[in-house]
Image 1 (cartoon, rainbow, N blue to C red):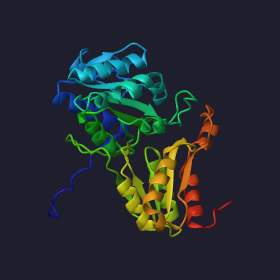
Image 2: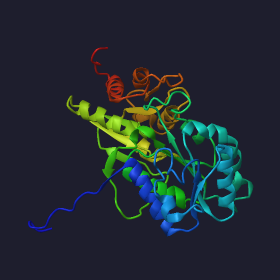
Image 3: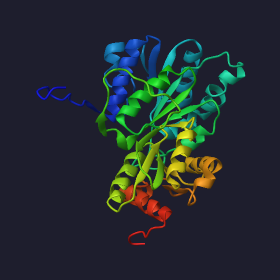
Image 4: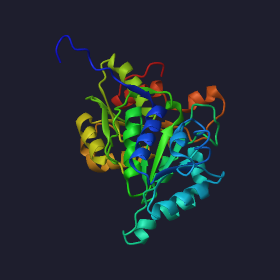
Length: 339
C-alpha cells in the first residue's frame, strides 16, 4: 500500500448480525438447508436472529412450528436422515431439557447405532446465559449436560466473527451440532469477514498472549476475562486467555500447551460451579500437565443456585471482570484488594 492509498475500512457486525448474515449466505449456497422453530419465519425469531429470511426463501424453507421443542428436534432429525440439512431453533437453552430425549437418545446415537453408515447433519441453535432478567427458567447455561452425551458437538462463540465461522462449520457438519448464542452478547460488535468462511469445530483460539497465568473462558466470559486482563496488566500481571470455542470436542492440546507455558490456570464459565465444565477442564489439564503447575487449577463460576430475576442479584450471580481479577490474583498468590 502506498502512502496515498486509503486504508481498507474494517467492516463490523453485531453478534446477531453475523449470525443472520451467515444464514443468508448458507441458504443461498445450499438449497437443502432450511430453518424451523417457533416464530423463526414471519416474525424473524424472538430476538430477530432470523429476520428477513422468509422474504427471500419463503415458507417452505423458513418453517414456523408449534410450541413443542420435542417435535421441533424430531422434525430436524427426520429431515436430516432424509438428506436435508436442517437448522432448528429452540428459543432458550432451558427448553433443550424438554427435547432432551430426542437430542440425547435419538440424534446423538443414530450414527453409532447404524454402524457409522448414517449421517445426521442437524444443527440446533439456541440462546443461553443470564443477565437480561429472564429469571430462573430462561437464563441457564446447561452446556455441561450436553457435553456429557457422546455424539453431540457443542459450540459457544465469544465474538461475532467466531459466531459466523462456527455456525458455518456446524451446518456443514454431518453430525448433530448445538450452537449456543449468549443473550447478553447480541449487540456486541466486531470485525467480520463478508465472505463465507468456516472455523473448524474442536479448534480453540488464543485470544490474548500472556506469560503469568492461563485463563480458560468461553462465551460471554471471554470479553469479561479480557477486561480483567486489561486491569491486571496495569499491575504487571500478564494473562493468557484461551477460548476453546467448541466445548465438545474440547481442544485439550491447546489448553495443555498454554498451561505448560504459564504454569497457572484459572477456568471461567457462567454456568454453576458444581459439575460444570471447569471441573472437566481442570481434570484434563492436571492429567496432562500436572508437573508444570505451580498452583491448583482454579474455577470461577456461578453459585449453586437458580438464577435470580432481580437485576441486582443477577449481577452478583454472574461472574464478572472483578471476580475474575480477584481469582487470578489468588491463584498467583498476590493480595486481593478489599479481601
